[in-house]
Length: 70
Image (tube, rainbow, N blue to C red; front, side, top):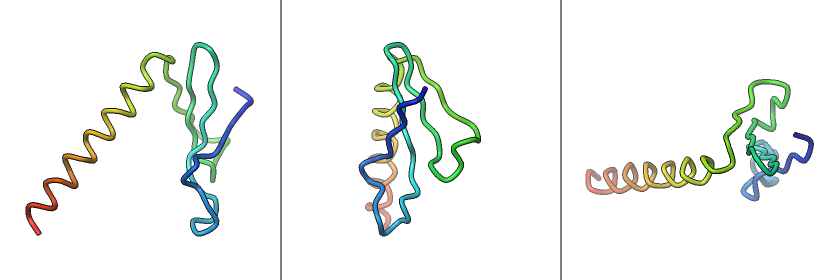
């Protein structure tokens, strides 16, 4: 994968340290922009969207629970 792009959430305040993503017709890859030569997560294209949606769901559940406690 050659066409790596940084997350749109990466900006000057965080030193441009974020995740990068690359995609092909069959796979999506994610890596740490601070250490691009290290491990890369590679997903079949059809599995990436459900993975991201599950992260959003988990985050909502965690933040929702924390809001009830405090």
